Image 1 (cartoon, rainbow, N blue to C red):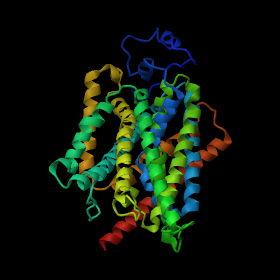
Image 2 (cartoon, one colour; image 1 turned 60 degrees about the horizontal axis):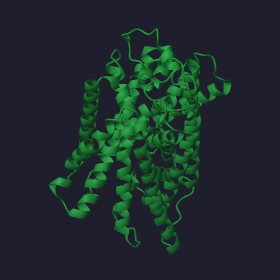
Image 3 (spheres, helix red, strand yellow; image 1 turned 90 degrees about the vertical axis):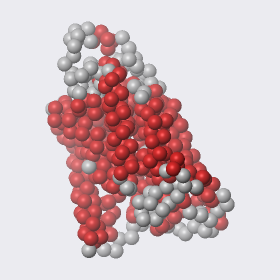
Image 4 (cartoon, rainbow, N blue to C red; image 1 turned 180 degrees about the horizontal axis):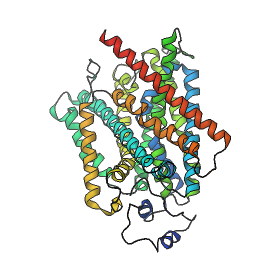
Length: 458
């Protein structure tokens, strides 16, 4: 299965018509046919699809959102999250509408339809860069939570270290190795994304549990009068602080990126016309979680909010059972990320296969190739998590490059290309806004990082 092939149009509610459409197909196809995989299953429910897409959205990006409030202030921060949700919905609507016009069942197929072979290859490379970076971030956070970290120069003890003390078996490398073998590998072996609906439902429940705990802590501290009201608006005092406002854009893009899984989820839906409602339901639910986590996280820690808010939960919070609640917050989110991992891994494997084996048989039909790609990617992500010191090295790179392309630049480019002549004037105007905002924000981010690097070296 690849991300880039145009396949026969599926009839709503019909499982037989697709097989009839393939009667004249060659016995040995010249390239992989994505529908060959999806023909095996077209019975995913609306709720299962919502869980899978919501799990794709709510990953590690939520941990950075309270820090964006520190930059933007509460009012502007909430407004920007809502704006990004609407912008993400518009970009996904572009993908769905142009895919339907071209009878296309994959993101790569859409890019190939609009820009040819190199458009599809560019999409596959961006998914590769983005998803490998995101999965490395997940594994780094899991290692930080369970085994601790010293990346900032100060050692933050992990949960296992706090419970049992320092031992070889709760060291970072060994814990990540056991997690990879015992949790990631089995979940990564499912050949249909709908098979992950139960783990996705559990991951969403864990994210909600994480939010409920933060909410309870914030309410307790509000009642006890130990919370200082945080800033409502950004603190802009000079040109440098103004440019800093734009550095939150890649973080917000990463927080909402889910475009690479929309087609995969839509292809397995019992009624593919529901994908628009699935997207809007998922975005609305995740936006509520994001706003509440950002608000109460920033309310709790104010200007002391760290780039990864989980790091704020390793000290005394000044409330009863503080350390127990700290561990509950960190463990629930580490478990959430473990269950998000296979949802992000699924499209990564598809795109790797399509990039390096474009003329091979569908991936699920080749056990050897499936096992080779799966194990190779798991080893690469494991090594990356052990050698990259901080999640922000990966976050800034993926957020400023591949994530922006997948989320906004590619959907906008497809709309402006308008190969099927269906875009409206307002579509083209919105597409231009997406591209300008993406490019401008990334230029500001690169400039800001370069200035910070120069100041460190002086």
